[in-house]
Amino acid sequence: MSPVVSVEDLTKNYGSVTALAGVGFTVEEGEVLAILGPNGAGKTTAVEILEGYRRADGGAISVLGHDPSSGGREFRDRIGIVLQETGIEVVLTVREAIDIYARSYSRRLPTDELINLVGLDGKADARIKTLSGGQKRRLDLALGLAGDPELLFLDEPTTGFDPSARRKSWAMIEGLTKLGKTILLTTHYLDEAQNLADRIIVLADGSIVAEGTADTLGEGRASSTISFTVEGAGEPPRLDGGPVMTGRTVTYRSASVTADLLALTSWATQHGVELDGLEVTRPSLEDVYLDIVGEAGYGGRAS
Image (cartoon, rainbow, N blue to C red):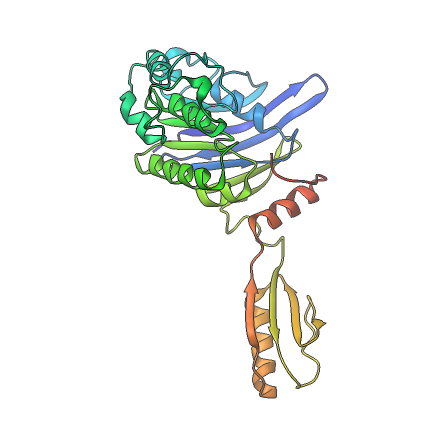
């Protein structure tokens, strides 16, 4: 089966500035792909090209079997887009906005089903101007789903949500993948990417600098931490990442956890001591991301 999205050697320049320099990736049916990267990395340009709102300077792009720049109505009928901000007439009610928006599509999800799906039941007849920021964001998501899209572009989908609302939205997005939807997600919440994405790509300076799952993205990059407490038995063994002694607590930075654990447990067995509170802490996605973008010459968070 062909990928829903296929990108090869994608390039885009703005005068002397290179926004995308030979980017390539795929998105399979039913997959959630998250694109991370600092400001100016090329994320917005790449997504706008895939949505058909911007033309590439070079490369081969296929989205649902179409060149998005020339796919026309047939192409747009099969995608849904949730932007960071949507210009909706605020005097409309939630129901009216969804009904009007859905008329653009040949396939439509029932309005009441959409309202329930995004958690706006009880607000169907409320005017948009009376909604909270989080409720307006839920309406944005409903509008993106109005045409029952095969491919959904989510741009910062939970901005403005409180932690509880974000968790509920994650569950809803996970439910969409069970319905066979394919999702391309941009987010500055690293925990959101970790919870939702099947794969993650990191862009920097217009190129992909890392790709993988949340678990494999940092392989060979950010170190894990091994820690325990011990009494007596002299100095713990020296390994590449330590030890660092803080009272009775011993800490190692480890890029090879299995090998280092073998060395430590062998030492403990030989000296007849217990490694009390032995704990291995893997680097978080945030640790990995900051290491990746720092290596690329950036600092700060995903955006």
